[in-house]
Amino acid sequence: MEKEIKRNRRKIKIRKTIYGEAKIPRIAIFRSNRYLYLQAIDDRLGKTIASANTQKSKEPKTKQALTVASSLAEKLQKAKINQAVFDRAGYKYHGLVKTIADCLREKKIKI
Image 1 (cartoon, rainbow, N blue to C red):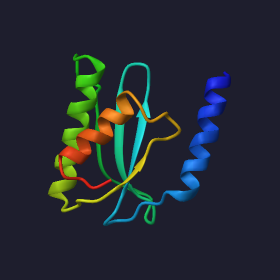
Image 2: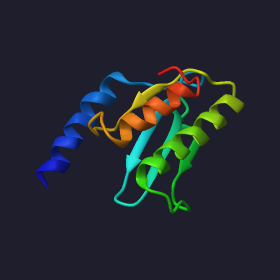
Image 3: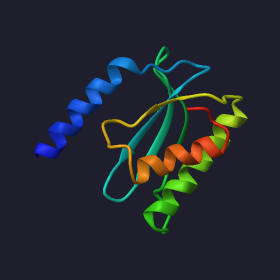
């Protein structure tokens, strides 16, 4: 329970400073025990621009992170978006979160 409380505190701190717009959306991460979810969000309108998840994937988690990040990057490039704000949602910046951020940078999305 204490882990969840600490993560929520970090999440609130991060969200005070991060804001996404239509040209520079906020890329939000959610990790469940099984799946990864990514969304590019326009906070001004409150709409999701693009999203990707790993619900149909049977790969190991690190490969899932790479495929989800690359599919989101492709969707953003089709929408002519090449810059975004990275919202790690209170998760520590290592492991899968770092892998996602690095993959997005490789795919020419400036974070």
